[in-house]
Image (cartoon, rainbow, N blue to C red; front, side, top):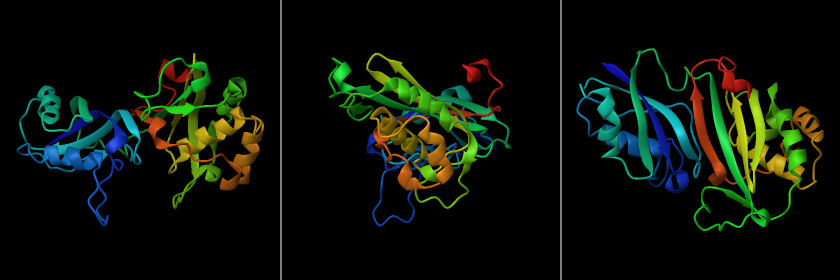
Length: 260
């Protein structure tokens, strides 16, 4: 029996998130569901895929990691082509490699990284038709300098209950990086942590947008997190601007780029 690690990209627009919804009243389309259907057609593969994270409906992935077990003898270099021939066009396997049986896509993961994309419509000459389901368009002006000063205030180990949505787990997390980059009209939040609460990244974006609109000062972020009151933070930003960007299997800070 071999364990195969996959790196996938997917457009989450037409998916009800990653995880199969076993208890749903009506069948819903999920990334895990279509991947396991493709695996089921490979002789020897156990059609159970385990992912590094569970994305919500409408969320995309640039590099989601998953693993599955198999006793087939397909050369690992040919696995992406074999699966892509069986997958719908909104899911692609980018890479496959054989890993030790002790590897777990979720539990071996040291950190997860997300990107959230926004575009300032007033500053952009580009249309919104092609990107309407992949970027959050912001119609009004924003104080970008204030947002960039506020973003690092989410870094560190703390209780993030103020950003939690229907969360039953502990709300303490360590955010290793939270930075807002700007390139012309395009803004990208780059955030990495040892784990995220449900809708946590979207709540960070919503809070930063409040800062950009002048509803909060950058200095208010620390106080609202300490208050642990969800009503004091911004609303959850829409899911279509969110991308699962990386699952890290070495501790954060061991690479030079982690400090950039």
